[in-house]
Length: 213
Image (cartoon, rainbow, N blue to C red):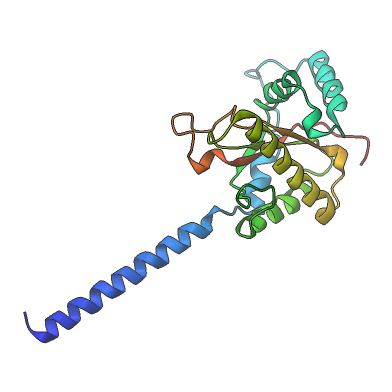
């Protein structure tokens, strides 16, 4: 191999490594989500009309749901019982929702700087006329590392942090945001409990307009 070939080969390897690092950085920055994507995920799905329409929502069930949600408005996150947390999860299962990969500082409920754009996008989405006035559940989740009590408290503090940020920076009504923590009880990837994908904040549109608007 000539000196020229060696030099050219070295330059090619260097360029390839640089491109790989750039791609990695781009992927690392792609965790933040856009306002439009949040809006699309949380908008209530229009009712289908026609002969093939499925069973209509039971007004009695809707009334019970609204009554229950009213009992958890303005409640301290840590005051929710296990039964109430499970009831919220059951109601939220059929609602429009989105998981946000919001990172927090290590062993802390402070939002990491890299995740602030996602929280800002959430604030803009919930302030949009298409969503404003609905009741939203903000649920904190942790990974499986650590004890149950510690993770439960951490998930609650992190959900409270998101609510406080939205109220203070976007003027959202605190009564429209129900916070709940699930610790490590509802892993997104049960086969890999330590995976960062489990450390998330889930936002659910309960689609119950309040009298505050």
